[in-house]
Image 1 (cartoon, one colour):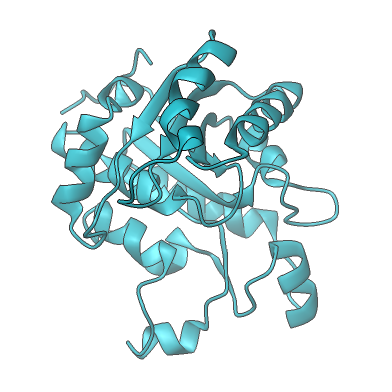
Image 2 (cartoon, helix red, strand yellow):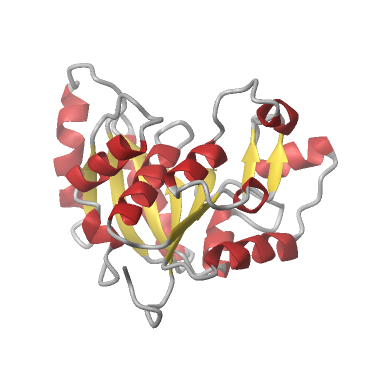
Length: 244
């Protein structure tokens, strides 16, 4: 357990695209952090593509926010983990406009502050990629900068990831964000293609000043212990260290 004088860290988790494993990596980091004795919370400030009524009734699959909550030990209110829920699976700016919703930054800040109470680590998961708009004026890059998050870039190991990862690192650095890691996720159990077999080594060569990790495929995503094991196997303990 960290002592009371240890400064809280914020890790912002973004992706090179949608559907490449941000929630899996975020949940794995949270689960492993708990195993290491860290007091951790996680947040998905805006979750779209979710009918909140259906989730509340238990008739829908686990949402990203619910997975994050479980990985953190089911101790925080869902309304703090995801202050805004939007039904249509669109960028937050678009889904909010179509639903007649206006985002209140004070509400987001208040939820973040509540989650951080007596915690060592806060994980903030974005939606899609780094420049996905929350409002016309604010992207996730801006939100991560506002909250002084170190950045974890999740990149799906498939053809095209080299370009996507390099573009995301470049955009992050231009926004003044510190990139703590690029995590290359294994998308399936199939025999890797030539691209999939070489992407990790090539990213290490192309990003010599950054930590690049290879995250294994996880079969049972609802098993918190399996996620923690995957994070450990990928070497993400180094990312969770205060010295990272």
